[in-house]
Length: 256
Image (tube, rainbow, N blue to C red; front, side, top):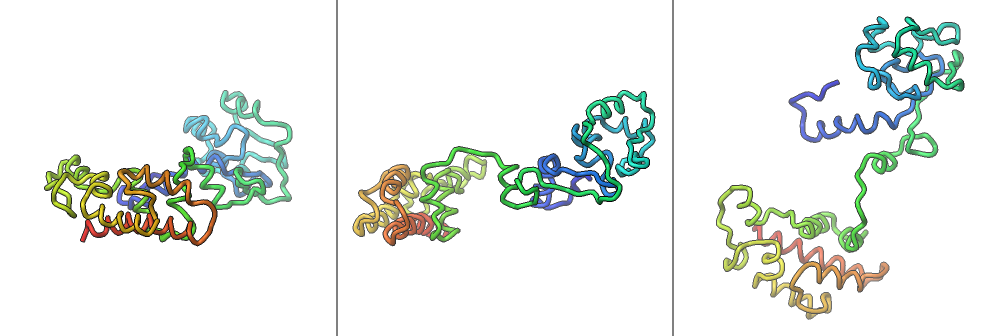
């Protein structure tokens, strides 16, 4: 099924995952009544339609939606046109242990999970792209953090907030002056660490021993927090929360 053009972004993304998930679903043939002959992943070659294309369906006079049961006759394979090269390839790659059982219903298993059952976590781990774990991961995504604070802090680390320098780089032609101090170009570095307004906020954290010294870059802050935040003590939770709250507060103040 093609993705409808009028679908939302979320719907298109979800439907686009089908090509990643389909090979992870294994169909076990019993009587073949519920397994699609060409479309489902029941054969050792994988989905036969994906392997051989529409031509094999046309040549064998089998509908695209045909079930495996249509090629079973009294428990034995009954492939039409045995001289067809595609059928010969299918038969050659059919192992002896791939047998039908007319007294058993077809079943489905989820390959990534050891118990063959579908678990959302196993699906996520199977289809996602894996990247090295960053040293600041536990600082930003600590268990006690407010999600919206952590999200903004994460975007700052990646420098993906819509600061004025980025907006202008997209061709919007805005006044690029910092919204908090009106004295310099608004960048991530300036907004959170060089702006006079931000400096006052950081000074309060220094006075309360929430930061070792006046930071000049987020990397310095994350390095210091990485050393200080060990375990789940009250101080560790206070440190991680104060960092996320500070960054979130500055960004919110900028947008007021």
